[in-house]
Image (cartoon, one colour):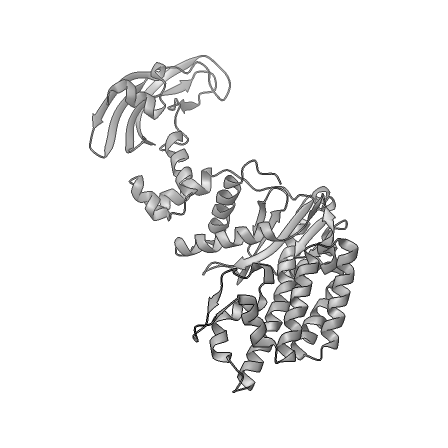
Length: 418
């Protein structure tokens, strides 16, 4: 590698170099640089009367494509004849006294990957604390503004965090993170929302949440124009959990219930949409070929407490996918009534929960800007956060973890608008 190639790779300006002497090595490159005198004005008072006081030597760490470069820079130090203050002429590629812009940019690019700080430090021949300091100081603030439609949900916190759950707020339209709060408790939500600009909170027209009362209360208090939408995934989970509780209770109580042991293998099929069941035939131990739908019906047909909830769930799946807001309201009322009249304890409990939130559940059938609002964007981010946490083996500093999550997620969704 010749001198010109090294200068170009480091991003140096040849006009500022009075001397350039590289020492090539197998893994790193050492370069001795003397800077030309190029300062013409004092940065403090603007005077052009400067005196070359001395030349000092400092180290700047930079990065090439496949290696690390250490630059020993001899730079001039000036004394202003007017204000008598001293200052140094720095290398143009330096972010700070000992890091180049290229080095910092490469470190930040590596932080976008699922890698530990220690792995990144090994690549750049430094220590993990130095990589953390670079990330803390130089990573860009990519937080999104609160949009007209937002999603609020929680995820399990890091091991040495402030509380068990962290709260995440996501812009539904851009799928970018607005903020990650270290706690989901109502007092902490209030403290955060009080600090937000009122014009941003007033323009929120819909907030999608789960059935956690803290989120609902916070939205009602601080977002006067927002309608609360209960995410369909969460209110359907209460329904499917009730079905599985019924199945477990009946199978456990009735010791001689036919086929109960082998049906455990297909228990998840019991709460699936019928159209999502596999099309191929299932081969039973007896050698009989049967469809998955018939397999389920064979198991439930002799028991009202298994048959009634299953067909009620399938009716809800089929109708909810195709109905508008008015039809959705009727569907919710009808489903709650059928649950209450079923005489099945688990369904009656589910109906009681739905009744408490039914006005917010009905809003999930409304169209906001031509779309039904769900927590889909935030659930996708939560799954990435979980895998990210697992692969990196946990974080001790939860605030740094939040910042890195925002940096990684919002960088990957650059320019996204749905």
